[in-house]
Image 1 (cartoon, rainbow, N blue to C red):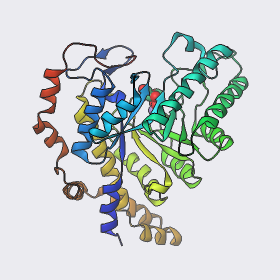
Image 2 (cartoon, rainbow, N blue to C red; image 1 turned 45 degrees about the horizontal axis):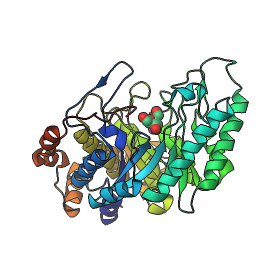
Image 3 (cartoon, helix red, strand yellow; image 1 turned 180 degrees about the vertical axis):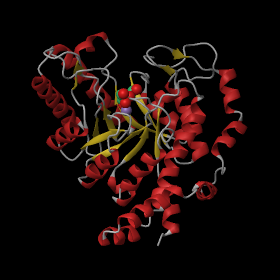
Amino acid sequence: MIDHVAVRAALRAQHIETPSWAYGDSGTRFKVFAQEGVPRDAYEKIDDAAQVHRFTGVAPTVALHIPWDAVADYADLARYARDRGVGIGAINPNVFQEDDYRLGSVCHPDAGVRRKALDHLLECVDIMDVTGSADLSLWFADGTNYPGQDSIAARQERLSEALRTVYARLGPTQRMLLEYKLFEPAFYTMDVPDWGTSYAHCVDLGPAARVLVDTGHHAPGTNIEFIVAFLLGRSRLGGFHFNSRFYADDDLMVGAADPYQLFRIMVEIVLGGGLSAAAGVAFMLDQCHNIEPKIPALIRSVMNVQEATAKALLVDAEALRGYQAAGDVLAANAVLTDAFATDVRPLLASVREELGIDRDPIAAYHRSGYFEKIREERVGGAAAGWGA
Ligand code: PSV
Ligand code: MN
């Protein structure tokens, strides 16, 4: 039996964080395409994030990437966000875009470069203190391209040392999320290539260190829902960077490539209690909208996560357990496929009515005239984008 009141309550309560960098211009290594009306600074990115929240009702925070979003006064930025109905979410340090980091950051063979990277990570915790952010979201581009280039083991030691220093600096309500990535930018070894490496470092550090799962950071065919179930069961799933991929780290809209995979991930979340605030799972997007308009793409992405969540909430857990215990493979599988096949769009439209917003966020956004306004206003200055 499905408790429909609880399903609605869970859908109203879910929060999906958008990334500041998805509002700026982006591209591939071949070309960054300029779009009209793109924000020129962190304040304008917050204006856009506030629109995504206004039309979805479930995107109340925006993650920052430092120094892409560096401002003179973070208290002022946090106030600005609050006045627009959103908050500052995770802080993402950037230790990958300077010449000094050619051979890595916290794993670099040179102690001076390691210190520089560490100082930036610590500076980001200072920023969290001011913005009230709970999560320091760490991703290291560190790794090697050629066998013999550096010692794999020594790099792990350097990584541990840096993580320990940053962990010790965290406040009592702050967490460290450690993201892994199979390859890119390094092609031979990455220093945090997989969830096992991240998990081991987090266990060494303590309970406030958790693994961040970016759905685009796995080898093709990886069973991501297994990783999710395992980490959730050990209270080490810190959150997601949702996006979708056809080939590698494509950073396309979540749910666009494989909505069934997204559903399977959300099934493990729902069945494992990962939707409750106590579970501490942060649902964040990490995407780049290179060719599509950014704000509607983010609205669509939030809706895609909601659809997968709604379908997962419609899994009849009691029936599923019964079939599993009885070894009824086909009936157990059908519980999942039936839930996946349900059209949850009317349910979500009515949940939106309960939230006091339009049933159709995309149409409401297009009607609002916001894009026409920013297209007119945001002329001159440099559009925010990679490296800016
Ligand atoms: C790296 O590919 C990554 O997923 C990390 O989360 C970065 O912070 C983000 O993308 C930046 O584009
Ligand atoms: Mn990511």
